[in-house]
Image 1 (cartoon, helix red, strand yellow):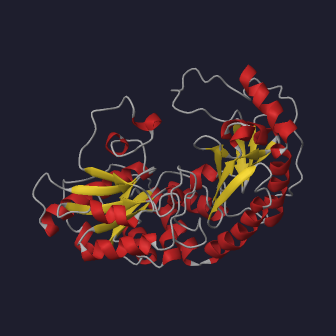
Image 2: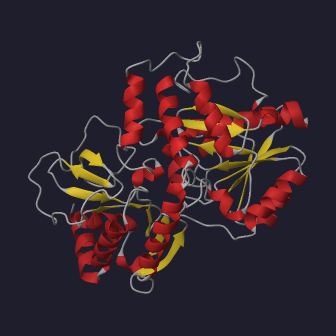
Image 3: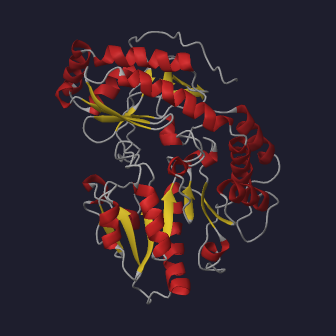
Length: 426
């Protein structure tokens, strides 16, 4: 496989004959409402379904597939490690962990790495570290640590994380909630400053809010937050799980504003699209507050994950992926802006990451994504009539154009209305 993955020409929509195309999945918990496409194989930026139809993946597993499906360099690293050792637990050392952590720390400009598995684990771990730092280093009274977060946030769906969410779908019905969090509007540095007090140990933010619809903050926001955190002796924690590792045209989204956080939370693309790999990355004066027995993970930092993660870090250290995302992202956003005023209300984002607000009169984002999938393009709605695009960084300019042509077709009133009517009868 090469970066010029596949000829954009692909079969048009057809009638499925396979009973697996839209499976009922009776044994799967219904915490998702997927687009009715059943993947069988994937390579590069393309997914082939069980009927043999090919779809351009413009979601990229929420940035987990930044380097494309089954990138040969990452697959080779995984296969090589599968022949050696895959899991020891942290009860024993492996020869893969320290090299991986050293490389990731260097990429981040930090000193230490706490390896975990999922993004939500990284967030939970970051919260624990911030509280411990607050008690041991800052001197906050025991049990009084507070963390300031932003409205519209998405950091995962564990019990603690939903405790400071304002998304009713994620939060309602799952109380009682974990205390110790203060929520203020995203992008409002003055409100954030007012929320910080002597017991504040951290500010936890997504530099660009993903689930909220790829919301880019005002240009002065993150620099003002950085200055505030430094002045008030508060940790700035950047959740770069979706925005980081090349997605926005920089290694980390915070770089667009010249900001360096105290703590990076990483995940998704760190696993190369093969397995869950996440990490908390910070200097020794922060991560050094943890001692044996205070935190752990059986699978965190396992040899297989470390081999894959190290390969991803090496690829990012070359700098070509960031440049590719910036250049192709400029093309993607230029094409998307063509639709503003013609069914699209607004387009936002950086690099190969875009949030698109559709005219609400046309229907929901879910309706649009269903119809778009029938034209061979996979995307995902978020709130209401908003959808997001995050194609793998291996996508080509011609493939972007191919997707945008089908986006234009789907935007036509007759096409979109037919899809919405069909969805209501399902």
